[in-house]
Image (cartoon, rainbow, N blue to C red; front, side, top):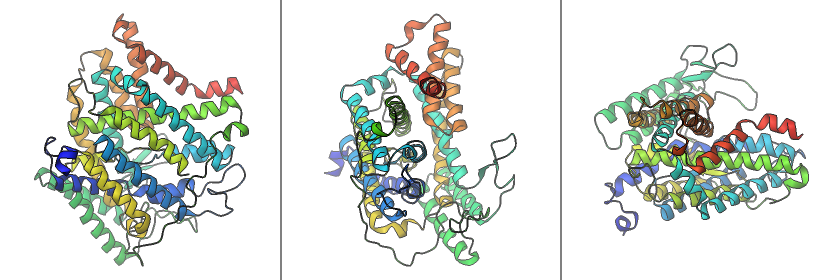
Length: 478
């Protein structure tokens, strides 16, 4: 029954591979359950209140709601779209919601704007516009998007592991380790996990990524038990320990289960934001959310589809409309759940790297997220440094697609180049996609080949120009 419903054999996979892939995807993105409460759960709105309207933060409520929405929407992605793509609160988007939106209104008002943005994207999917835009993108630009995302997630892995860090001063934005030196046992755990995963991958061991994560986690627990390293940042004292663990401290918890509460679910005011700020300002906030959601997902879907071999000769992803439909619902669901917009996660590529090819992997990931609402203490065992080697390996696998770009045609090569480098350099998928679209339109126009530009691509490039010029537009309309 599973094989027939999810087309497992048809896609050259097995139930075991799908389960392994789903577990790996969960391990590489489970951090969001711990990280999202730290981003939006500790931020105050314009009235000085925390999420839920309290005078004190309640991180457990945010964590439980984050895991619940992620679990439900990821299962829907698997069942409805049959695609190995997991969904959770979007990083970057949650920071924008906390800092750029909630600071101007109440949390309920801010989440209302998130719901509104999700509903608008849903309408764009139902009318066929979102899928039409995806099909209007030249095939080689789709390849460039996949390659750029590969570099982007590899950089995420290196940064989250502490192998690469922000300098904060000087002309160079990032550096090796702490001021040019690799320090601390966590980096050793990352290196161990990376080289073990590389060795297993070279030997074509089927569960290479999963084995690497489990082995590195075991090593991390043993090291923390022996040396008592502690976290990179101590929230209670404000002290920074360059040799500490980046997020989760890998120690066995006193208990593995806790009863979740979902009190903040449904705490949103759909149009309340328009009463707190001007109409133009509110529209620009919704537009920013919409554009990021719209194209981040398109890029992620393209990358996962290419890696899994689920695209046709024109680079169109199988079942794209259903994928985009679930992702649009997830954006609104995140706002309705008071956990910020939910979106597709590029970390799903780690599960595809483990062999996932169908929605069964997403169902497995989703079920694990639902269990996390009860087992949050257990998830805290896995440190960044044990999970991120998977992202570096998958980044390499996605990079191999670069050979599909015609580098002799400057009209496509330059936009592809900008797409690829700006994703990791700006730490933003949408910026890379936007730069690629705008430069493609401009160069083809200079070449006298404007007939090759789809009308939709003209529209999208114009919208990205508005996105890039938001600051002067805000000044002009103030």
